[in-house]
Amino acid sequence: MTVDSSAASEPRRSAAGKAGTTGSKTGTKRTTSRTTTRTTARTTSKKSADPELVQLLTPEGKRVKNAEYDAYVAGITPEELRGLYRDMVLTRRFDAEATALQRQGELGLWASLLGQEAAQIGSGRATREDDYVFPTYREHGVAWCRGVDPTNLLGMFRGVNHGGWDPNSNNFHLYTIVIGSQTLHATGYAMGVAKDGADSAVIAYFGDGASSQGDVAESFTFSAVYNAPVVFFCQNNQWAISEPTEKQTRVPLYQRAQGFGFPGVRVDGNDVLACLAVTKWALERARSGEGPTLVEAYTYRMGAHTTSDDPTRYRGDEERLAWEAKDPILRLRRYLEASNHADEGFFAELEIESEALGRRVREAVRAMPDPDNFAIFENVYADGHALVDEERAQFAAYQATFADVEGGN
Image (cartoon, rainbow, N blue to C red):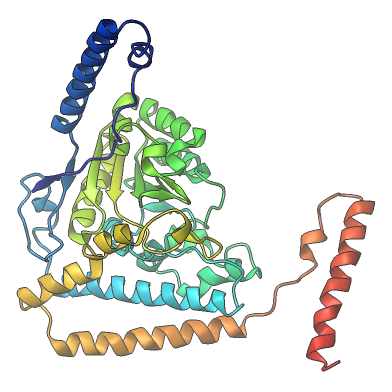
């Protein structure tokens, strides 16, 4: 099943239309009429060319058919469906605990994935063990699928390490903070995979905002020219911090792949089955030597960009409420219940497991050492610098004021 979804904003008025407002009344009327006709034609054309959205599970939890992608989830069992649900619930619980820990001062920052669980779990479960994953800094669900212990994700956000896990142990690269650069890493790695003749694929995650970066365009060029076995998985969560998608592109993001010579597809990013099926298809294309694919998972970032952000400053509650009705976890639960694939006992046990995970994460973070407050001043200059020394001394004096408070003085 495909459903219409509009991404591009309405066309801007042409320069000719603006010029037509000067001169005689007759000329103005004719010019305005022509401008209106052209605008109407463009709008009609845009609507008729609205992109299709791959969807296998509706927001109401109803299974719908798709001739192209059904085969990729045809053999899925009730146990596997429950597994997908469990993955999403536990990932959301971990994410909520990390957000709370940041608010309590245990983490310096946190990038929440709230609302994007289906995109990450569906695509993550589509990968094979020998595939290699290049994440950004929000792929906590993909990390879960790759077997990375959730507590290992938190050291960097606490400031006590630069990653916390061995990328080669799980074929899951370290988080990348520089926007879009991981697509270049993925492309180069995929080119190496092809030269080695390995039967594996690479997947790179990035957001709609990163799609505006030059690194992403370069990755598209190199991967297409060298037929690299890579899948570019863009989680379009509608907001690049405070900038909406229409400020990033004039066409749906998945259509950008056409200009580079490889296919793109837009999938319902809140539908875990659709994300699983589409990513499986794209990865199989890569492994069979058919080159790169761009997958745009159309989803929504329910929370802030990071815990330093305030989304109420740039978007309204009505938008969030509309997306809450498409919640990925509730959608799969409705399907499980309607299909008699899960009972109340399953959901109750999962709730207990979820709370246990939250406690484990909380205890692990609080057992971590405090970050070195003065490490920021080291290795700035090879031979030291007077200004850095001055700043270090000022910071030391500032820190000492907290010691006085703790000592009761």
